[in-house]
Length: 183
Image (cartoon, rainbow, N blue to C red; front, top):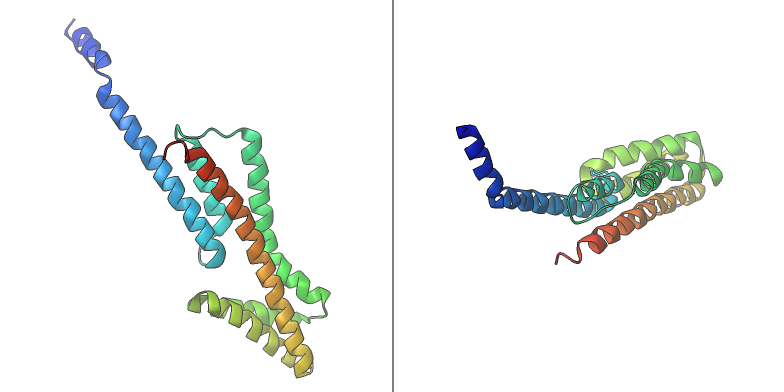
């Protein structure tokens, strides 16, 4: 009997429960916003996986009361994020091979990018260019041709970054569109 009275009292006093739900909801919205913004920044700074962070931010936003996305939405954007993430690594390699780059130039660019990761964005960009240049010189190409290959690798690197920024920007738009009524 005493348990029934306490249970009835708890059920009639739902205000603390709604406060906890609102706090959790606010936390999910803010955390999702943090992930989406970190994802956009991660498209420029390569130490963060840009588009996957944006995608996970949208998934977390879905679990709040602010937004409800459909399953086809998540499947479609999941495939787009996987494709863009993969193309970000394949586009520079394909571009160098398409425009006559050698395997040593590709490996040099990759090694330069990896070495440049310790020096933030400029290190990666300059590392890719210098690595491709050194790789092409080692392959026996003239310095003019090696410079051309190095800059073509840079252009395709920028194309990969732009494609990631486009997807991250669209996911940022979906985030803002869903929470604009809360602001």
